[in-house]
Length: 361
Ligand code: PMV
Image 1 (cartoon, rainbow, N blue to C red):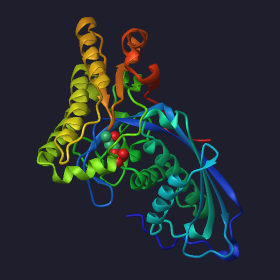
Image 2 (image 1 turned 120 degrees about the vertical axis):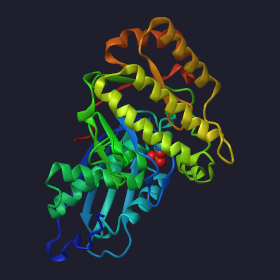
Image 3 (image 1 turned 90 degrees about the horizontal axis):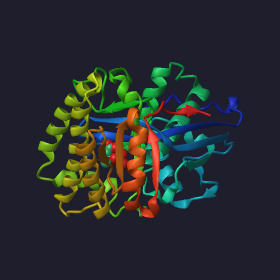
Image 4 (image 1 turned 180 degrees about the vertical axis):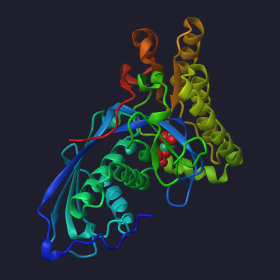
C-alpha cells in the first residue's frame, strides 16, 4: 500500500548529510499473534501493552552517494561494535523496503543501535529494534520529501514498516497499548499496521506493571519465525484463530471496564495456549523450563492466598512476565524478592511497566 516510485532524490539537489535517533520500547502481547500469511500478515488480531524500560536506541546516519548503484550501502553497529549477523538482517529488511523507499541506494547509511537490557538476557529485542529503525526511516522520508507531516500518517507508516521487519514490532509505535489485526472490536484496526488502543483503556491499565523474570538467558532453540511457520501444519490452527478473535473482543471489554479478573484469565489462558500450540506442532517443541512452571504455580497460589490481582504471561520463550496494577507494586516486589527471584537465572529480573511509547531523541 505504500509502494511509491516517486521517492527518488534529485542528484542536482542532493541533501546535506544528517541523522535521526529514536528510542523505542518493547511490548508484551496479551492476546498473542501466532501464525502468519503473505508478507508478515497476522492470522488473528493481537493486543499488547507498550513497555517503558526495555528499549532500543537507534541512530540512522545518512549521506548522499555521488556514485550510487542498485545496492544499499549500509554499515551496522550494535553497542558501538560492527555486527555482521545483525547487519545482514537489516540489509535484507532494507532491500525488502525498496518498492516503498527506492531512494535508499542513493544514500550511504550507518545504523547505530543499542538496547537498555543485556542482549543475552533472553529478551526478544526485535520489537524495540525494528520499531526504532522504522521510526528513523520515516523521519528520513519526511526530511527528504516532506511527505509525513501529519503525526497519524507518520505513525501508521512507521507501524507498517516495523511490521515488515518483525510482526509484533508494529505495535510498539503507540503509547500504552496497541491492536494489530482486523477486528470488529476496534474501529480502524488493520492487518497491515498496528493502531493505538489507548482510548479503550480504563485508568487501571495505564498504571500497569510488567516485571520480567529471566528464567534463562540462553537464546531460544526455535525462533519465532519457525514457530509461526509450524502453525501452517498445526491441526488446531483454525480453532486457535477463532479463539483468538473471540478473546480479543472479550479482552477489549475488560480493558474498558477495568475488569481485572476477566483480563487476567484471558492473559494467562493466552500464554498457556501459545505454549500448547508449540507442544502440539510437528515437530513438537517446548520453550518453558521447569522454573517457568514453578513460577506460574507460585503466582497462582499467591493470588489465591492474598487476593492480589497478579497474573502471568509468556512470550515465545521461558521467561515469565508478571502483570499487575500499580496499586500493589510494593507487595508484588517483596513477593518476587522472597519467592520468585531464586528461580531466575542469576536471580535476574527486569522491572518494567506500561509506558508512553517511542520518542525522538
Ligand atoms: O513478531 P514476531 O514474529 O517475533 O512474533 C512474536 C510472537 C509473540 O511474541 C509470541 C506474540 C506477540 O504477539 O508478540
